[in-house]
Image 1 (cartoon, rainbow, N blue to C red):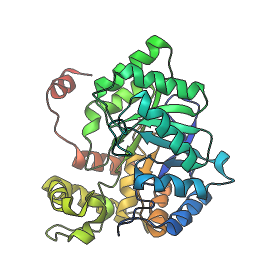
Image 2: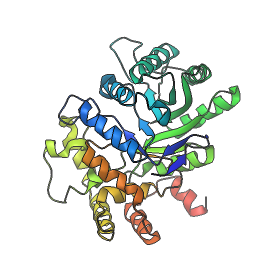
Image 3: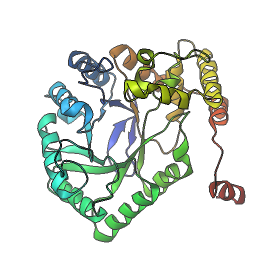
Image 4: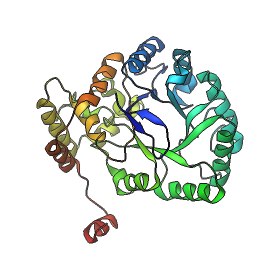
Length: 337
């Protein structure tokens, strides 16, 4: 496992981050605590140090599992978590107000059994709270030692830039990381965010690198899986049909075919490894969040760090997965960037 700088910070993170969204989930698609602990131990042995969490993952159980598993090894890892979404039924149990952020962070610290969060993310936009209130609170948390760095996730490019502008204007801590969905089948962020991250010194940390499992190599055209087989493709069992229809397009099947073809030229490699290796070639990417459900999947994913794609293979995957540019990006690209 190699290490990369997280944006323009001095923090080094492993090129793969262990995603923990389903650690402690009680449904059949969740990872039970015993399996999660085995995965964490293996990830550490492989050289991984970057853990991706959120206070809402499995209603906080994910943070509890990771905190327990890392006792005595806290100083070896980079712990990240997020705040924004509901943690209760009260009117102030969600959002990015100071009222919500402070107790949410304290609760995450207790569950993680640590004194500080290495990277604290805004988990989405809050239209009801002024951005300067949120950023001032984040800055206070960093100054108080409750967090070391801050990041942003799932908000618009202009909102990220507004946040950076407010931070610069007020001498507050700046975002150093940005988490967005990014894969061979979901390249939408390239219109704005990859350039933004490189220009402003934010390390891009993609989530969903296998397109909800679509790039794993287990699906074939003309054979629609049932709800149980679809697994990670849908957030809930009831939503899988719509999610599958959205992914099972002619373009995406061509991508799957190309990924499988590239994998066939690398003895012992899998489609998942090729999809992850492609993301690791993107210059804006600091670390890729892998969402393995069990130890076997994790071991497969980790092998992506040893897979070196040729220039021709990268170009082939770039071409087959290219998305058509819309206005004004088409004009900008034609006239020159």
